[in-house]
View 1: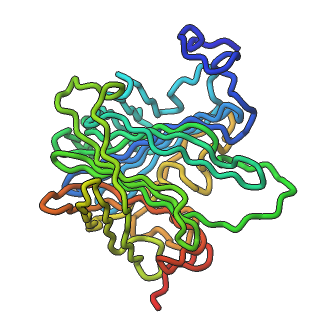
View 2: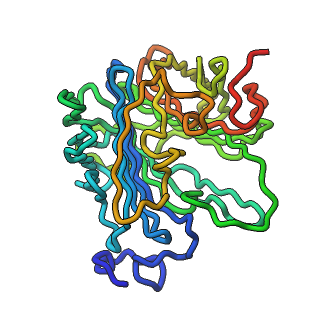
View 3: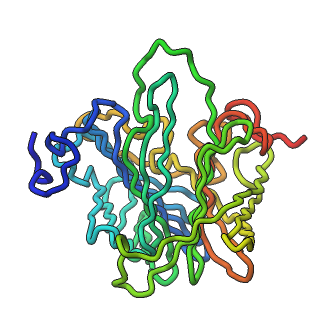
Length: 374
């Protein structure tokens, strides 16, 4: 099937753009957003995914304020032209790799928004993330990450919150490829042990941004890592791709992570990295509150990414942060909003944590068992 995109010179195969290179049902293409008030007054979350081999598009928007996580979800039939709108949620690419608009129209769940993301850095490409199991690529995707500011409004019930670029920072990413989504096809392979340990920490400081991404096996063996210092744009119209100042790649990545008793949620954390000249930096995290990624569909029991909901279904929920059950699998994937310190710099950002299964270096056992001090 031809679509409007076929009028542009962007083809990667001999097929129309709408036809993916494989029939893998786990093929996906996703937007992700977060945002946070510099003083910790609120946090924004957003996501939209296209699953062309499932015929599904879904999206979610979440807002944490006054200790409650409010969310609205939408899922339905994916349009052939990959339109970025489903139910009340629309994403508009105002200027590629520079500004994105996120709209949530008024709806029966009382959560709406009109927000504009403006780039504060160039977009960076993270190392490709690939897992092969039983000779099958069960994960193989690329992600770009970009730091920026948010401006606009969010309305919760009868309250409208002003979002100012001077005090609201955030990160957006785009990822595409293959990753487990929706109901998985049965196979005759022996079941694999459930284990994942993932940390992701994009941080804002006044004069620069930093990044950390890493995966580890249960014994602490690291199979993917990246740590960067990312320059901020020196002017609003500075390039965000192509001829840009390259991020500084850091080595000697080491972390300290202490879990809250009974949870897989940080009590304290620090990162140490080494520059090419041998000088080391230490970043310390002071947690403010934790956002449950289920609020934008990650591992949600009903609104999980790529799940089928017919032509269109829209829903919502509001859950007090104190009411999330730490032993519920949908509560394990989290982003903790933190104030951060690096030498004499202070900043703001998140430490994303996803830890299923055992992880010897941080004392985790079982599948979702909370940390138990020795």
